Image (cartoon, rainbow, N blue to C red; front, side, top):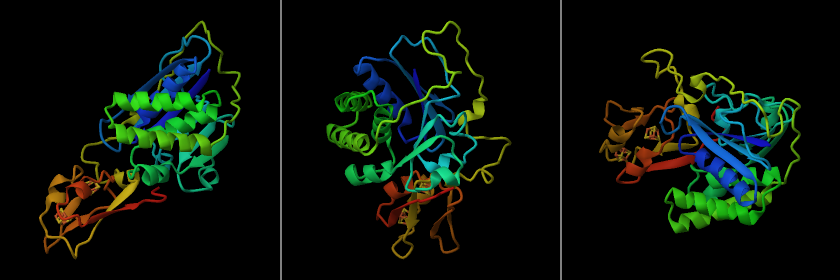
Length: 298
Ligand code: SF4
Ligand code: SF4
């Protein structure tokens, strides 16, 4: 059995990435199981998705703590205790990280094999948007396990993205992204530990995990100042104050309340807490907010 754990933030599409991997495996003739675990239903909050793939019937249920493959949708999750994506990673684990940082394995002392892929860059190049990386990382997972043909990956991407009502044109672009990721990466032989039994198994053990695993870590009331949600950001909004007409629409629409007005009534963003949802960018009527890609937000 192959156990894949996907880590992302609300909006990354990691539930869909897990489904793409599961559906592609199913189309290939394997048994598959996939499911997400949500914490806070909040854009930017950590979420985890799980996929099991096996040639035999899958009798395990629930989350698993020792994945064969870990997929991380954004390197800022590595240091986020609410996400904890390296939990259960051993020298036998394969970790794939969406990042532009090459020496990330050493920076975070990650055990096992680490592959990096600039999925956000690929999405920006092909789709024109880089926030959702489901097809990219679903494609990466399918390639790494080495048992899924490209045609079945493509069919899985189309099926899963149709299920979430993505327009035809966007589905085509996502297929292109998935194919690119499939071609960039190479399959890796997965070494199972003795502690991971093959199916069928006789007993089912569900590991207990604290419910804070993907929660927003609210330990006391009024702690928003302490929780630096700026680390969640992949894209940074920048206001051109010289062209701003002080309509305050960004100030009103920001869901985090992190835009404040100065004494001249110009808006300013608190980057320690701006989570990069880009609602301000979408809503600014005169388009004076630009977007910059973040690198190494940790
Ligand atoms: S400042 Fe803009 S990008 Fe940042 S949290 Fe507010 S609306 Fe979202
Ligand atoms: S929405 Fe745009 S124009 Fe209006 S205050 Fe914000 S940055 Fe300025």
